[in-house]
Length: 311
Ligand code: ADP
Image 1 (tube, rainbow, N blue to C red):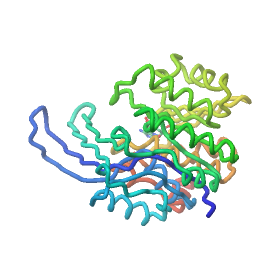
Image 2 (cartoon, protein in one colour):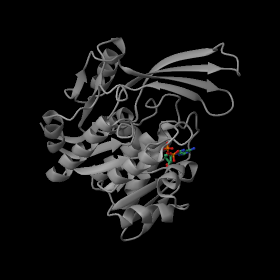
Image 3 (tube, rainbow, N blue to C red):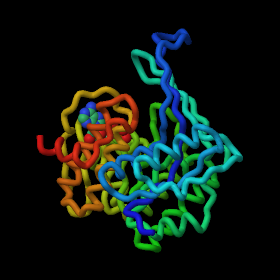
Image 4 (spheres, rainbow, N blue to C red):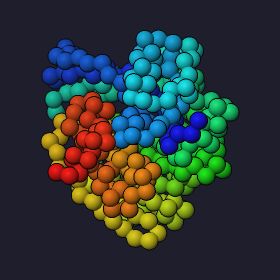
């Protein structure tokens, strides 16, 4: 069955603790779901697009919950495997009042039990208009990398367009030269790359959005959208440059902004919006994602998006 978008990625249970300082007595505890690709899928589904999600969870309550949440957002989870060989991925995020949180992850991909290439992936990608992937899985192991290359290759053969969000968080991950090489190789196979500014600097060794974009445009990418946080975003194509200021909101937590932004951008691509309107939709969806603590709570529905755009 045809879908507008197929996303391929990881699903994780997320536990959020808030500690007042270096002592480990937690003053607040919360349990959520996480995963960049999942956030983008939810964002797209809320904007009215049909989405199929490819991935794997363990045979446990967290996996069941993730499946339920995705399905209740209207996402096709027929490509979300339940695989008892490893538990559902999780992240434990420790927020402190000042400074960056510390995060520990269990990634199924690192355990080698997620995302082996299969004919189901090829079929799902072929039966979709667009594929969205991030750099998280391919950066993990040779197996997840191989699977991502093949997934993108299948998309290109089928004429399915591809967006890549590198999603390497310089503040949270130690990124190796090998990871950078893999992500850049993947990027050159995508139609559109969506780096953050610090990420783009790390990946390309260039300092400015112009330099970052030039690096990818020279390597055959058609559109480079550089996310600039509260300064908005800038689009570079072979034809020229457009920028859009951030949409003003009351910010609660900026984690997940990039995923909301990607959902808005892909939604605009699918709807055939002109470039500036596409950037604006992406900035509104990214801003909306910052208005709540959870990664996906703030992602707007189509009606909410229209209200924000009209205000
Ligand atoms: P990432 O989450 O990938 O690091 P950014 O922080 O640049 O990416 O955020 C992605 C987009 O979300 C930005 O381009 C912007 O449109 C929007 N955004 C991020 N932070 C804010 C903010 N403080 N106010 C309004 N919009 C924001």
